[in-house]
Image 1 (cartoon, helix red, strand yellow):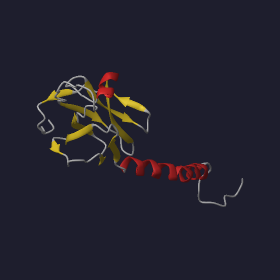
Image 2 (cartoon, rainbow, N blue to C red):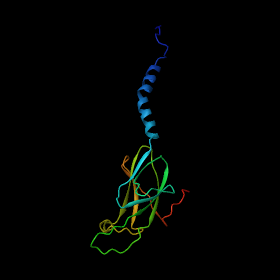
Image 3 (cartoon, rainbow, N blue to C red):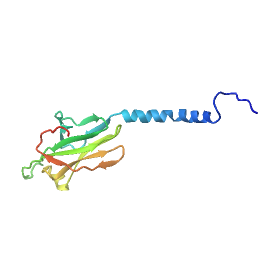
Image 4 (cartoon, helix red, strand yellow):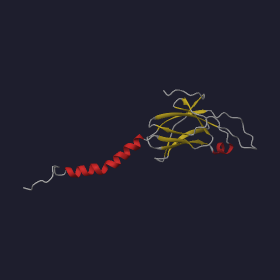
Length: 155
């Protein structure tokens, strides 16, 4: 019979060592899950109107948000190129809903036909805001709902 020199049972020391070794990873993951997500507008003609049913400050282009479902309403600033005859157009207001993850970085861009970008005249329904998760390198596809432009409380 071999005398035991430790109060820790056989094999338990290995389990304790493994738990202690993984502790920094667990703490880092927990900290990441508590960190707010960052959201910014990258298309210079895209204008945020509402975030979760509340008007946003004029000119605001970035936010820190909790991990949850959010809704945002956008319009586009029509600035026709000089020397072109542009038909007056209403850009409309597009409302999108998307879910974000804690600690991720997101960008909102606009998708539209190539002639829309070259003319800088944005017609309602011919463009759409799109949220891109830069951390996970994926696009969050949402179909916009076209509204009257008033901020609506989140349902």
